[in-house]
Length: 401
Ligand code: SAJ
Image (cartoon, rainbow, N blue to C red):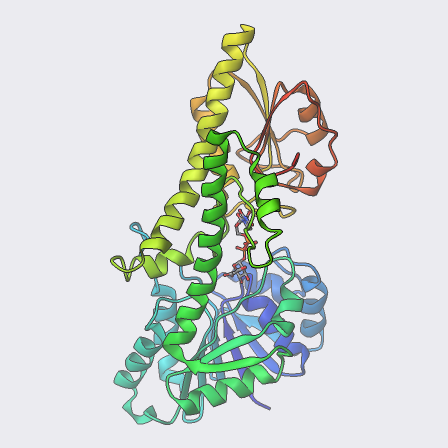
């Protein structure tokens, strides 16, 4: 039986390792975090993802998955480590480099090395050059490819199996070898290309979504000035058979869409004009929301001679999750907390019970008490509230549309 080593047991690495293990493969999952390794070896998990706990327990109990802090000699190495960005939004591929260095001495003829981490264009070729510079004996003897993940948090186990995937090797033999690997557990179509195109494809997918959301956010700013309900407008425009405008919101968050476009714009600053502008618009939208809240609070005080009670509804980066990574709602809340002295704030996040920075209030209570209600995230709980016309409602995510 072939031995498969997954390096990185996070939001993507762990579910993928577990799915491949569930097909009867022997998997070693590697993570630098000892807590993560110990948790998984107990048959438990350290992240929130529907169905994952049961699957991991199952493959650990059956002995198909084992976690460790050390990479061991295997036949396949799948790299699923983070690629954050540095100060000036430049991609930081140091985790991929470190892992590659660690693997080089144990590589042998016939091995397959696949990168799944979101990476700037050329990363796979660069890692290949590095490997062959240290191990010239392996030239044309191992297979190296790139295959990005495309799963949506919350639906990972389904999408891992049923989404199409793009696979790009450093040469045709590598593409074929990686193809065989994904064929063993993916039901969606597998599309062959080269490594550079596969890398760019991942960045393109998320940049495309960012640009489309920026269009909706720009419309929302225009509509605010023009006194037009942007939700009604988009709904009407989308009745056109070839128009499909996304939803405006309080900005764009998460670890993918708000990050990946920078991997293009930092490497191609002269060409990536629209991609950079989309990022600026989506970042500006969060700043604009915070300003709008502050100004509304000031106006309230001027007219009523007292401080308003403001309820801030939602902190997560998108509806119905507890994830605050790169969340524009969190940014807006912090900004309002810092700058708005003339208001009493109540902060609401129904998906989180307790938070060490934000004092959280129950959403029905906060709604009832508030003079100004600010909807930042379209959580399902908020949609069930009966809209009270006597309150000032700042609806940035289409709750009351
Ligand atoms: N958002 C809007 N308006 C919309 C849709 C989304 O403002 O109409 C906002 C959300 O509120 C959120 C942000 O965009 O702040 C991102 O949310 P999302 O649901 O669009 O995406 P993610 O970050 O959860 O997952 C994305 C997915 N990419 C695409 O849909 C192209 C997913 O398939 C990728 O696997 C994932 O990024 C990733 O890991 O790259």
